[in-house]
Length: 204
Image (cartoon, rainbow, N blue to C red; front, top):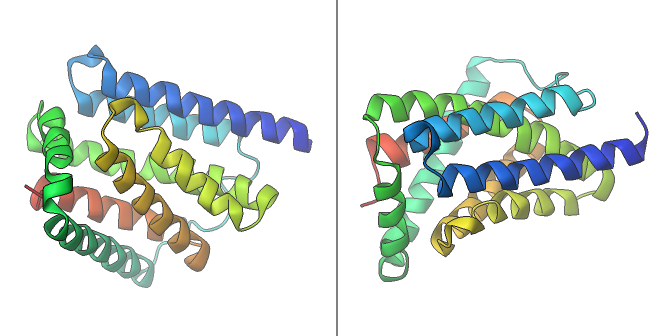
């Protein structure tokens, strides 16, 4: 596969992510946010598996150390959000509350299961596929570009707090992925953070 073809696949993948997240946040198909985001994430991961050159290779080893790094980093990210939320509460409380209201359309066990699936699929697309491709073509700038795209797909919500939160999380997981070179570290980190912030210890 030549460089032009790879660049085209990356651009199409980013466009697909924007379109899917628009449907996730601004439509009512499937009757539940959690069903929509799960299906959308699976579609993105499938796209990465089909069009990502070598995306399935390397970085997939699981060990106790990998799991611990993921759990600790996910807990650290949650703690950072907890502190930031309380320090800047007057500025972000409204945005955070609207997110929780929006996603509270299904039982918690549905949300918890969805978060496991979506965390895996999102990391497969955004870090394993897209960040790898962007870093290969743009060097260190690729990590920042990937985090920006990850944040910007949330612009359709009109919720700037959510966009900023996605930017911080995208940069954090991007750095973790580059530093550890482990897909599973960021997967477990993503799972821990989402389960804490949406299911077990929501910021409200």
